[in-house]
Amino acid sequence: MRRFLVVLILSLGAVGAASAQNVPAKASDIDGAWMGTLDAGTAKLRVVFHFVNTADGLTATMDSLDQDMKGLPVTKVTRNGSSLKLELKQIPGVGVFEGTIDKDRESISGTWSQSGNSLPLQLKRVKDSAEMERPRPQNPTKPYPYREEEVSFENSGAGIKLAGTLTIPPGKDPFPGVVLVAGSGAHDRDEALMGHRPFLVLSDYLTRRGIAVLRYDKRGVGESEGTYATATTSDFADDAEAGLAYLERRGEIDQRKIGLIGHSEGGMIAPLLAARNSSVAFIVMMAGPGIPGDELLVEQTLLIAEANGQTHETAEKAAGEERIILSLVKDETDSAVLEKKLREQLTGQVPEAQIGAAIKSTSSPWFRYFISYDPAAALRKVKCPVLAVIGSKDLQVPPEQNIPAIRKALEDAGNQKFEIDELPGLNHLFQTAKTGSPAEYAQIEETISPVALEKIAAWVAKQ
Image 1 (tube, rainbow, N blue to C red):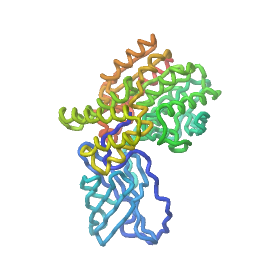
Image 2: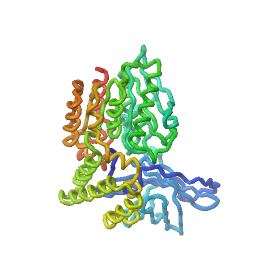
Image 3: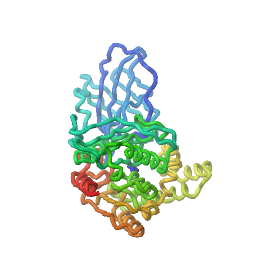
Image 4: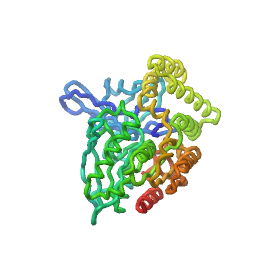
């Protein structure tokens, strides 16, 4: 589950860009891109401000590179000589940067403030766009040694079309095929997050090994229709099933050898589909949970807090507070009453400016469904081959908590065709990690460990 640390700058949901079109004017002395890094100790986030002078005055947008957020409108730009102030009211807690432009117009030194907290931020003029790119050596480059096709398929029950990419190996068909199912969050077909594109890397690796791969934008994301904000795990499962049906209609794909590879929440969706759809030939659970969501999130809170340097006692307290909130959400069906109780519980725990966003998030349809859903119920019905892999340093789906539950559920199902592996040194994204904290995700160059890629590809090939 992509339940990241307390957001330092932005929510991970999409924020719309400004719709107004400004008329360009003569460039100012600070027009262009300026980049700096917010260092919060547990995480370092790179931000870029893009300045454009217009007939109506200086305008700006902001990118949070490590959160895959681009083009966020700066609500107000105020400049008085060398003094500069930027306000972003759409960001939770309202973001404000106040700085001083140096004499040679090469740096702007100042402070970023949000929700009552402040961090120093020095911006440097970007002279080469390559400076804004983190090295991701595993991203494949074209031309690919296989066919790539832009496709769309329909979830008729929801009345929406989903857009994706199908990669087909060279050689004689039919080929085995897989549908990639992303984790929680508004993911595109590459499951892009923190500057990484895990599903691009995974699909490339599998296709080069002779396996056709379908990956797609989630509903309401990218080129896919539908509304993301009101969808639950069950809805996303229906979308994945529509992708499965699409592959079954493709003549290049062997209908008897189509499986699902799900990451995180996708690893929960894969067994849910396999339990009800006999056409699923196999499933791979990449960091898929085996326990209910509320239990998972409490442990996740504890482990991430400790990994980020908090004492065990402080982390236990945070986990206890999380447990209380989850209980409120599970037990209270009246939305107005729930909001009141959550506000009372959150007051004093989080900045006042963030309480509204926290209530909206924890009372959403997706969250309510997720914390109540028990993956073991579906796993106990899965008869097809299963590969479950979890990194030993996964703090979001901890192996010691989830592997026993997955194994027991599959044994209860009488499944004789499953393999469960704990992969040493890997985190929730299957990167080679130091602590496993989500704060490391963007800093690590590796997108997916070759060990994990080979394990998955070899196992799928055997099926």
